[in-house]
Length: 115
Image (cartoon, rainbow, N blue to C red; front, side, top):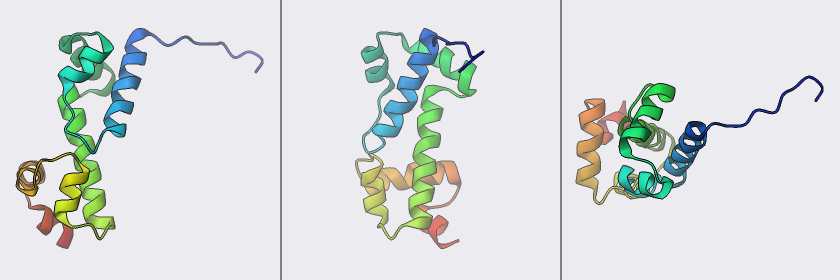
């Protein structure tokens, strides 16, 4: 379009886009930050800096927030069992998921679903 400049993405934008897409695409797995940084060829400190600057949260917090978002969505909008939800979000078992959910939401997945 006329008057529109082509903008080249910076490396940090490319890394951040990859990180966010990776998290979304691998929600069903346990996501390890060191595997992402190894793939990108950047340090964990660099990814942390990018996330804090552009997302205002650490990479770990971003992953937690996305898993919680999907957990709450599935608990409210699906008929999946809590075990199925735990498995679909990469948790090794329902107890680990329940502890994770309860520690962040201050109520169990079952109680959240029923409220």
